[in-house]
Length: 199
Image (cartoon, rainbow, N blue to C red; front, side):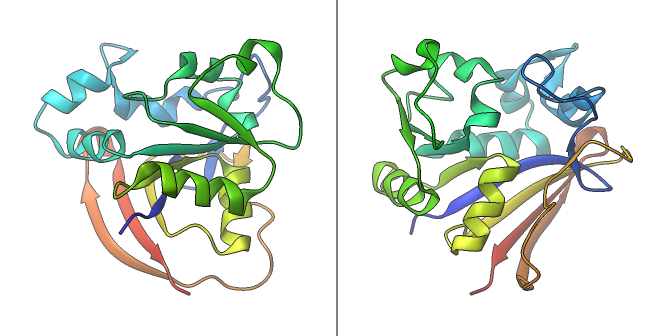
């Protein structure tokens, strides 16, 4: 059965971006450190990592096998809309209360949706029997609150940021129980931790 799965890299102290983040500095100061496990020779090279027969390659294979993507506008637009294709031509659902900027309005794979429950439902329908890749702190918080986020795959990087943007900042006071289903030690010090949301 299809699941909605949040894939996020974060510092050991829970930050997904460094300080001073903005449209031209989406990961904040020093935030690129959180994604070095996806790089070879200093460049983002997912295909090289997939061919590496490594733990990190296994994780990349997993998220590249998803059948749809859901993200917030604050994740999607600073990333240039991933050029209109996150991976393999899968549909992309962007959570936003506003119309897309002109440069993103004509991307055929991209649909802007103003409700997280609708975005997740439509993504699951589009993904068929494949999982849905979820990105973004705001989207994760809204999806957890609405009960529509099924699993979390957290890539924990051995660094302390001390400041920046936290993944779970601003959650409701109600506890959300998780079941740990996997921990993998990846290359470059990253630890991949997978959890299922208990309902």
